[in-house]
Image (cartoon, rainbow, N blue to C red):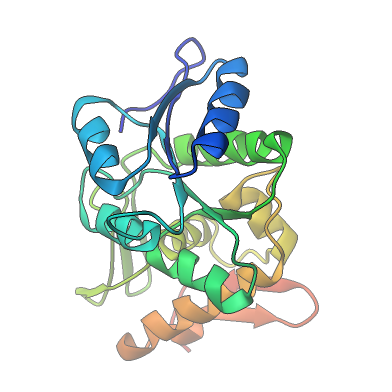
Length: 237
């Protein structure tokens, strides 16, 4: 994945088995000057990614020859695509389905049917947020060390397993230690302004962060400030 510049259009990969939806998305995105690639199967998507630099992927949940969910999981295991922005396209609206998509490594989700305008807003927000996390940053806070280039968080020298979005959330909090952020502020800073994700999504990711930090005795660093939001404190209490 290469970084975008103001004079270089982003390459977007659509992975969707319904031709009518692929065609609609392609037309809408090309009108916004994106370079669009499309695939109806996971196998075809992998062929495209082997020969093209992709900045963002739109992945349908249900695909022939392999689910979109498993495809996203495989991307997050590959160093080349670990930071690739991914939006899941799904007809599933239950909370456990949505969180399953986020758990797999999707950055955002949009439920069918959706308007091209809403999708375009989410794409712009996610591309902006992605560019903000491109710098090779190393951060240290108490027992925690974060290496953005290696996409790795460690606690007292031991690697902390984190999902894609949890890593970005932790990166933001470590850059702003001891500062309290409301759910809406975290959505703006981490998910991007213009996102349509519900505020409860923040709570889900905070809960997962605490769960990941607990085996290392660092869960108390992620503090809930009643009525205000969340903050990352510099030391273990």
